Image (cartoon, rainbow, N blue to C red):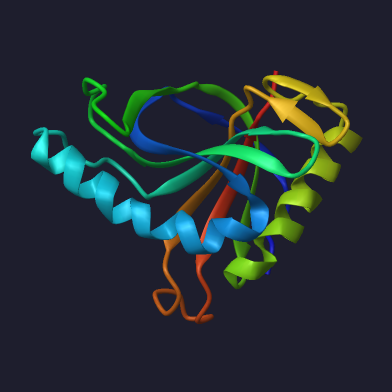
Length: 163
C-alpha cells in the first residue's frame, strides 16, 4: 500500500553514516547490516539516536553504480572517524510517500514518487539529468520493520528533496 504523494517540510537533521559505492542488486546484502554498526558507533561516541534508520541515495551513475549513505539521525554532528561520516541532512521541501510494502517493492515506490514529482513540475535536489543524479537527497526512512505493522510489511517513508 502506498499513500498519496505529498510535499512536506523537513528540518535539518544531524546524522552519522557509512558510505557505500555499489550496484542496486547489492543493496539488500551489504547495506542493512551496517545499520547496527552505525548505531554502535554513535553510542560509543556519546551521541544519541533521534529517529529511524535511513538510506540516502546520493548519486546514481550510468552503468548502475550508486553512492549511498546507511545512516542514523543523531542529536548533534559528531566528529567523523574512519569509515563513519557525519553531517547534516538538508532541511526544506521534500516530495514524500509512505510505502507499506515488502522491501523488494521499494524500487517501484521510488519510481512512482519520482514520476509524480516530475509531473507536478518539481526539480530535484542536486544535479539530475535523465536517470542520473549527483548530490541528491533521496531518502528511504525505515519507520517500522516487518511484523511491527498490522500489515506484516515494513513501513518506509520515501522522501526526495526538491528545490
